[in-house]
Amino acid sequence: MKHVRYGYRGVLIEYDDSCLAGEEWIVHMGVDNLPNGRHQPFYTVLVDSRDREGDPSTYVAEENISLIFTDSNRGADADADVDVDVDVDVDVDVDVDVDD
Image (cartoon, rainbow, N blue to C red):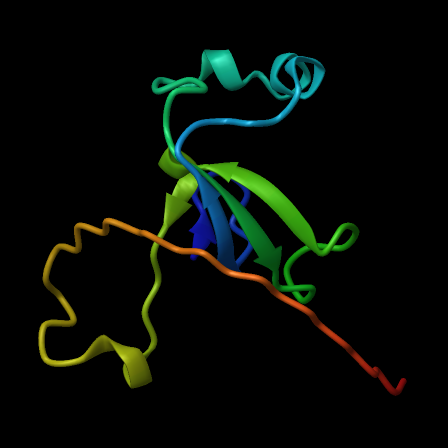
């Protein structure tokens, strides 16, 4: 996926049917100012660290997500419009060993 406004890439790892963040976060992030507000799916995204420094995950409204495809995952209908209905239940454990 790619964030529509900020342009960073990431992987969707979890979703909620609506925004489950606390009221303080919702107000701070201006969620209610989005066209679909807090009553749309929100996704936990594992952010590509090459695109954005800081916290490796973030919480993103569905309307701010654009699906991206590479040649290896496009398939025959690569240019077709894609309508996605996601039903995911994921537990993720990540161990990363980075050498400078």
